Image 1: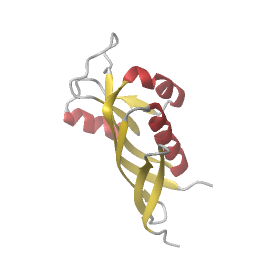
Image 2: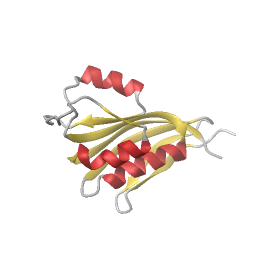
Image 3: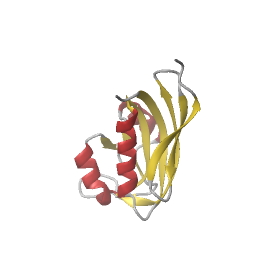
Length: 137
C-alpha cells in the first residue's frame, strides 16, 4: 500500500548534465518532460504547472539538431502520486547524474496531514523523506 503525496521542489545539478546522458532515463520512465532551451521564467513556471517532472535547461545551453537543450541544470518536481513512485523517479534521476553534485529543495504533503522534506543522501545518491508534521489519525 502506498501513500498519496504531493511532492514539489527542485533538484539542482552542478555542473549541468548533458541531456544526452539522460536519454535512457527520459525514454524509459516516460514521466520526464524537457523545457525548451529558450524558455522564459514565465514559460518555465507554466510548464512546471503541466508537467510532474520537468527538466530545466542550463543557462546559455546550446540546442541540438532537434532544438532541445544540450544541458540540464535542474529537475522541477510538482507531483501528486504514490510517494514511493516519486522517490523512484528522483532516485533514477540522481543515478543518471553520476559525477555531478545534486542539491535538493523538496517538500511534501500527504493525504493524512503529514508534511516534511525530501532529502538526498549524498553518499548513496538516493532520496528519502523526513517527516516534520506527523500523520493525523
